Each structure stands twice: as C-alpha cells, then as structure tokens.
Image: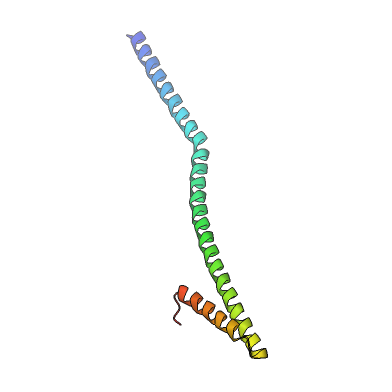
Length: 112
C-alpha cells in the first residue's frame, strides 16, 4: 500500500514537473517572439504612413506644377503689359498674353 502511495506521489510530481516545464517553454517562446511581433507591427504602421506621405507628396507636386504654370502665364502677361506701356506698340504680344492668361484661368475653373 505504501509503495502504491509513493508511486502515486511520484507520478503526480512527474506530471507537475512536466506541466511546469511546458509552461516555462511557452513563456520563453512568447518572450522570444514578442520583439519580432512588435517589430512587424511597427513596420506595418510605418509602411502605411509612408504610403500616405507619398500620396500627399504627389498631390503637392501636382499643385506646385499648376502654380508654376500659372506664374509663367502671369509673368508673360505682365511683361507684355510693361512692354506695351513702355513703347505702346506691342498690341499683338499683349493680345497673345491676354489670350494665354484667359485660357489658363478658364482651365483652372476661374471665371473670366
């Protein structure tokens, strides 16, 4: 009878030891993989942010190109006005600049 109790205690001790080893292994595995999971989350967030910023840069680039085109038309019109004011005879150049400015404003949706 005593031998059976000792065997039962040994079996219970063995089961508890195996359970403890399994729990320690699971905790260690989670600690090992935690930095990788955190890194993957951070990389995913950074990739989404980068995509958003790239789209914003493209939009801003397009707006800047539009502004630059408008500035060129405005500068040409200003030069034609100044030339006409100085010598009074560059009417063709003034008409050409007026038409270019008008076309630019119409393309941008401004009312002329």
